[in-house]
Length: 240
Image (cartoon, rainbow, N blue to C red; front, side, top):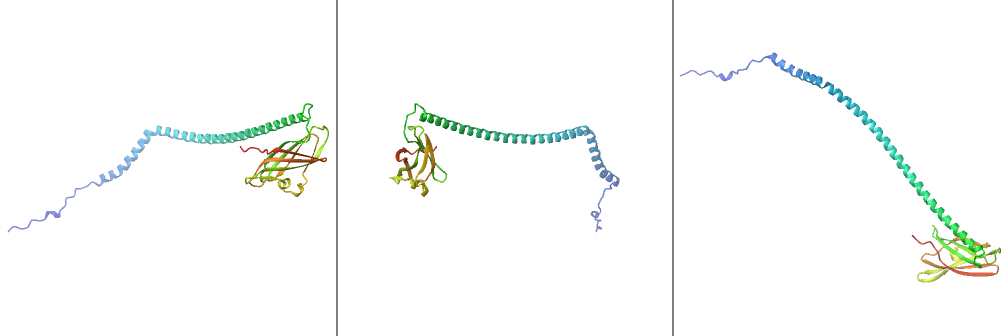
């Protein structure tokens, strides 16, 4: 019977290491990186300085462009305000010119009217209603302007009181609104006074009931023991 063989598995072969070599590797690797970085810095040194100068120049240019941009924005805002002011002023001037043109046209019409009335070639007429105009007011009332004329007795004064009634339609029925109803004032019962040699414009306000459509105006003039009546069409500005 043979004797048992020893178990060689209990023994491990460990290679012998060099401690100095290990420390050389550990220290050499970072040192090589430092040397590599320094060498790359030395190689890229001139270009890096140039890049830094370019970067600084770009930052300076960027700041300058920002100032110029802000200045340009302010100039644009100023020009925009100036343009708005100019446009507003031009519009106001145009409106003023239009108003002056209307005033001039009205004055010319008045001059022509006066020349026909008092001129040697003008047709002689007694007391009459030359025009009757009505314009709506903000409160729902109507502003009237009646022009009275006479050139039959030159130099003579025509004086008296004016009253008028408005004829129209309300609810499909003909209706007449007298002076007291139109004026809605007890102090106006006697009528509106007039006194002139050649012509006079009388103005005031009247109130029309809702749903009433005016058509004609019947004017009554009383003065010096005489009574004059005339019917004229209702004239109001047309709606644009």
